[in-house]
Image 1: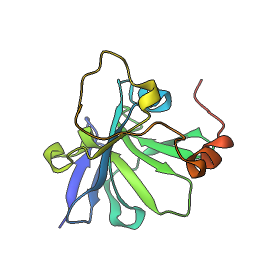
Image 2 (image 1 turned 45 degrees about the vertical axis):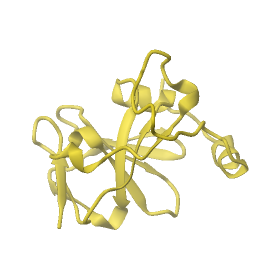
Image 3 (image 1 turned 120 degrees about the vertical axis):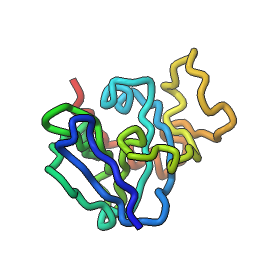
Length: 147
């Protein structure tokens, strides 16, 4: 089975060779807000080796020293997010899926930057960035490359 998606102009298409997306979530952090131009990023993942680019190739931007973001070089549609870690997981933007209904939000991240008037998924659990000692250690050395 494949879950498919792509950019708004059709230059870049992908297939996730999975039965279902994993860890569908929103992230309200400022980096995700800037990267998507929206109030939050909505993302759903799979193992990196399960994502295939079926048409065209995305461009990538290192939004920090910890992560890369893929986008269409023609129309600019945000397509992917992945940490530069041994965990071989990549997330696609839920809005770029051909069927976004396949990615029900399970958790929210970056609640410290959630816009106060955003009333969305109020019943979905969430986390603040750096809540755990492991997360604090991971983000401690982050260098933001966004202007």
